[in-house]
Image (cartoon, rainbow over all chains, first blue to last red; front, top):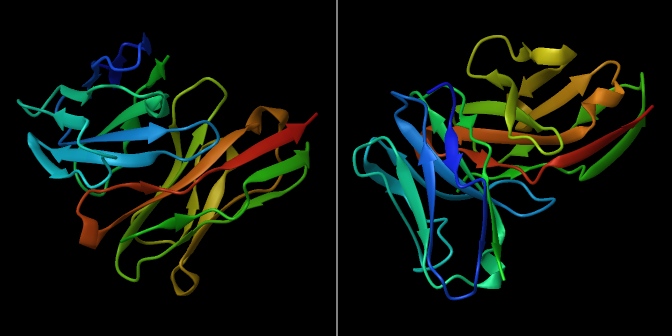
Length: 113
Length: 114
């Protein structure tokens, strides 16, 4: 596609529910990143993939968070048993290869009530 | 682990004033450096990037940044800001030791008064 696409754009969920956030990167991009951004803060790294391999998941806050990219393209970030503190903007970005810039999607605004 | 510091959290300027936003990173090896901008309600967009070569990098909308390796800095500058530059600005780095991981600073919120 023309750019990085994230869905849904907005998600309101009740505490304790599971949510799945989707990222469709630019076609052919090798690397895919997930970030969480609180209001007034910089993007906080969660995890990233090269192709289908998860390279680093050190930024995932706890074991309720997981991500996958099974075919090296679309990725899903899953949050189980959501808590209010999970409320944030979740951003996805992709890069064609090393030594290139990252392209960001519009983000998913998650609100846990 | 690599980290990025942006020391100015909020900056308020009048139109036509000059801008310099600080960015320092904490890695001594080869780095790729970026400045991204986020206008209100929009996604992050690339302003400029440094990979190698001339340490003075020119980006879009009249912005430039200078890579000073000895100071581990990549400060963003613009000689004369406009009201439309009101946005949040983020510095980011990737390093050779972290593969493709892209680390962001905490951001600087710029408000330009008309």
